[in-house]
Length: 265
Image (cartoon, rainbow, N blue to C red; front, side, top):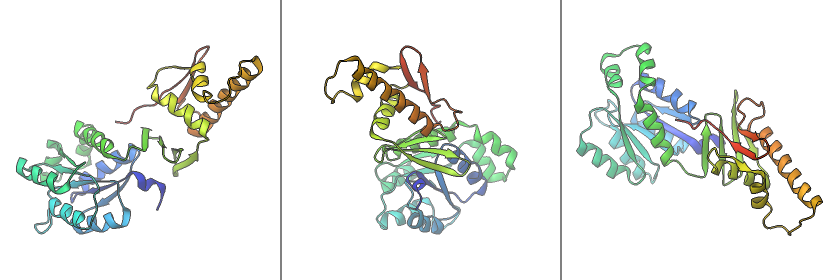
């Protein structure tokens, strides 16, 4: 199974138009997405793809298996994958029951009126473009992120880090490219990220990274440490932004560095 499976979303909806805009929206946000059009396919893909989260339509158009039935089958198989229900007409009682069945970490998002009209009237792709811009899509993605494992941090659509494995993943035309970080690279990178866009001084990096080493105060030792920081920054830039288009790590001359990324939404 590919590394992308760590961020796999299973999208279950019987309406192909809804899947046709939700899937690109999820993929543009950096997730891998697999689709199911009915309950049986959904249960199969849970076993086959081992998704991290399921986006599940409550009303699947099958009188014998709606979204709640799918969720029950998945739970009976022993899977505790978080579920986010999509709904248009579900009652409060249905939602409360669904969240009880789905268990901890689960949630729901109501479909917008555009989506309901698309379902009922079978409208064309022009209306899909309107729906893409609607806030419910952003709400769904935000709720997905809140329920994914927190050892993977997504910075934008093209960059994420697996903190457990000290690996950055950069998306290119062929998919996600994994690049391991050295310990010092990882420490510097996480310090810059934790600053949340603020400048981190060169001496702050120096003190944090070398605090456990022997106290050497001569000029040669200090220059050596500073050179190691500079080399580390240079290597990080090559690893997380090899073509130089994003300028994730910015130099603030005479002060230090800062990490800037467009927070995915």
